[in-house]
Length: 326
View 1: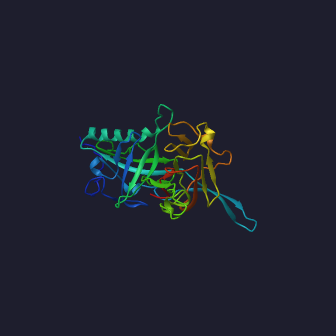
View 2 (view 1 turned 90 degrees about the horizontal axis):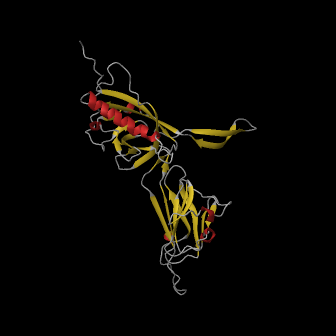
């Protein structure tokens, strides 16, 4: 009786190892990994792992799609009014194999669980996405948060599913932009007080609170997080390019002025204000006029103003650049 076997796909000769780049559509030479909600890292471009990416079927790594809202123009045509970025779908074909049937099945089941785990609700009812990471030969990386949508069914053809099979996985991304996992920190602090007769500053202007510039090297707007260190009686951050501004009064929270060494953290996405002990200071913002603004691509002229500042007063800004493509 003839033995039915799966079609053979020869793993690409990349030399093995997760750091060996392979050609990916819309990306070029890169390595890919998937980090599941538990933090486990799954190499996707290393055939020695027991699976590898079928690069010819990969899609969805380029610029995101947009929904355009326009208004008719009286002289013909239309004028763009608003562009809404849409959720992204990434198709990632994987070929899984084993030396025998059970080794193949174990690998297939483990990968399926790693991807579908993104849809399992936690104790608080929320779902934790996985992370798809694309790394370049120069060491730079870009990541995107993904949820499993469909595709881990196998080919379903004669001979498949014995010692090997292929799955074309669709990953759904609620945020369509790619993120640099390396955070950019920006530090600004109060200048050292000096004698009236010694007017020369002892801290360079690029590091002093007040009017300054913050560069966003990414392709799209980012929503930063600020940590303010006291002393300060009133905190005001203004984007001079847009005019957007917000103020935080520590006294309005019932705490009183921010004392030397005390810290408060202001996040913009989602908006939150937390004192160092975790207490909620959102009520101290200058509602309803407060706008927790973001940083546009390029150079942003901003002003960090701390009333009642003194030695030790500082603003630490951090964000991760966001990009259109992998």
